[in-house]
Image (cartoon, rainbow, N blue to C red; front, side, top):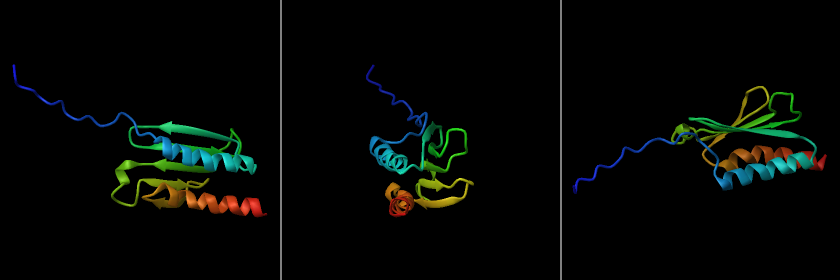
Length: 112
C-alpha cells in the first residue's frame, strides 16, 4: 500500500504564448494598427509551434509572422520573425530582440 508510482511526465499538448509575450506582441500590433499598417491578426497554436500572424487586409497572406518554437531554444533561438514572402527577417533567443525589427519599422512609419 505504501508503494507510490510517479506518472510519466507528458509533453504539453500545444505550444502557447505566455501572458507577458502576448502583451508585448499585442503592444506592437496595436501601434501598427494605429499607424495604419496592419488591420487583422491570427493566432495558431500547435504541438510544436505557436504563431502570431499580422495582416494588412484579412484576405491576404500575412505580412509578418512571429513564431515561437521551443524545440529550437538551444540552437538558433526559439523566436522567429518571418516576412511576407516567408523570408526569415530575424531569429533569436529573446522576444525583444526579434521584435526590435518591427520597432524600427514602426519608428520609420511614424517619422515619414
